[in-house]
Length: 306
Image 1 (cartoon, rainbow, N blue to C red):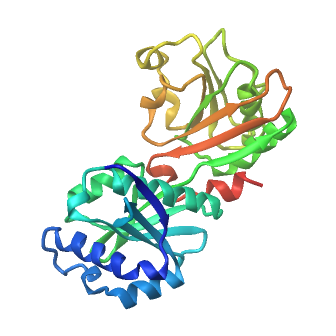
Image 2 (image 1 turned 180 degrees about the vertical axis):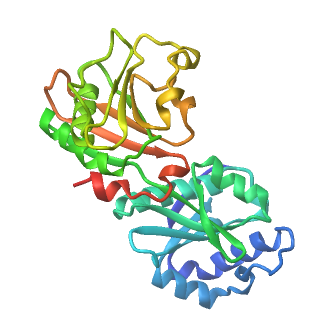
């Protein structure tokens, strides 16, 4: 491949888009019922592009891939007819289109993405699962898969960091895992303190460096907060030695310095990366990235990006 460009699909692309969709869907194993994508033509595609838009992948000016947008679900960007010419498959065209679609959803203020996939096509299902999409439900012969987008927030003060944690707290429940990363003085412990206050746990919440972990019981009948400092831990095995499994199901667990060593604790987690500033000086950027089925249908951006 020489020059692959992902651009906005326009009505004048309709004939080429319809041909790529036809070739792509016709190359798949027979389905019962057949995919209705095979009924599309240039007129129906032009109407869809005028209504909702989409993307095309052009290789040296030739359309070799496409996907259509669907705006029918408020707050979400739907994807459909994700197609690559059979002669161009296996070269990253679909992944490139999906990456641009996710950027588009973020730029348009959407919470996440949704699409329908046929379970009879295991390679297609694996494609989406490898890209952190998760099964959400069923729609006839289709499985609904979705991916929530990270929330990105700038905070200028310790009070603002506490307020961010306070907005997250109502979304949390027993069994949730938070992995906090950032340089010394970035604000990880400040975030944990705001979380403890909002959860109503017994404090004070302080850095647990010398004891590695502390349990803060709830004073309001909610989950406890287990606050962990993994700064001196170098492997997942050392995290396992803390026996956090004993408290995971009944607590919210927040692990500072947990990136790279604590992810094995749960398939579903929030990665909270704090960059910029130090020692309470300067603006921080906080990126909250959801992972796993637990967060597949939670609208983090609308809650945190205030």
